Image (cartoon, rainbow, N blue to C red; front, side, top):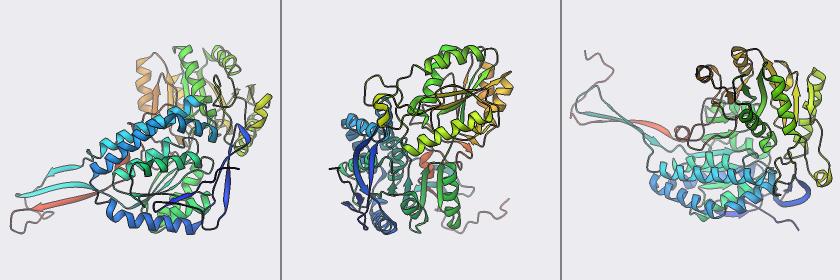
Length: 495
């Protein structure tokens, strides 16, 4: 019988009030049920928000270094349980074990970074324009933070949001993706084991409409942090705009890797294989477009197709597997729909383009890594986020055209340029419209201590990771202390 899991509200594990549940299955073997989880609704959200609101009155007064001490213990527990967490994540969402270990490690890195920020929540002092007067700005907690996260990085992305929120003195209501509830549950258990007080972190499982949007719309939730599709992000932004609720959106991407004729082609090949087919292409930073200089186009495509056809698909827990399954049947069908669109648009299918059903692969949602050439700017497969192992190759004549093609999408998350030309490298850094640019590295591989996010329809200007996320999860209060013992008037013409 499948293991039963629960919501965590006000320090207690409990079922959804309706008693309803949903199943969580292994995408590499759909017959395997990992567990059942509560199919929650608005009444469960209301209970969680009330618990967080009540807990905030004490949590906000806990000194930030003490909050950081708890995050240090969270990191220690994650180190102890790293292999267990990685293996359950692979079972739950499919990516290979080396990647899920990396996912957990990113959470560990974020925990230790957050712990140190508890002693480093810096703000500013500035001289007053008046004598015998002191001026400063301090960081203050905001309140209840609603955290809504995707399935593709079920440990790393929640930690990017929850850990800074806690260090800044906020309480959390957390809705994880329904495809990865087990990893999220394990994270909340670790937070509890590390000593986070009851009510400070709450998890409510369920669907986006029944749970996620109820968190977004709740009047006692002061801020929202969401990672997911641009379409859903726009809906959340509209909802938050009605009450001017603070919201951070990390959304879609259509990321490109440029390879110039002077590049190290072997290095660029390793980069695009990892960028396009790592995590089965299921990353917001995945390389979904490959822009090749015409002088090396044919040679590089030949190298790429040969290597791609050798990639080993399978259960991510098995040694030697390089590409895992799509997360579910719906995502596999979406991938195939875009393959059919690409063929109809006149792109040339070089490899892949179909579901993999050999042997045990038929038990899961495996799709063969797919490459299209003869892709023209403006084609749907070149413009729209697919979120699967489908790569579009575009030929260009020179560096200027490469940058023009790269920038010509509604997204602007990650980008990559392979060249030995230092001048072109710095032009790329200056001219690419993206939140992240890599030189001679793939479009994936963000580090936990640096800002993460994008421009255009990839987000709304906020950043996760590094120091920047602490600006989102805290409020600046300006303070003036006048010790002149007389009325002094700023903003009056004193000159």
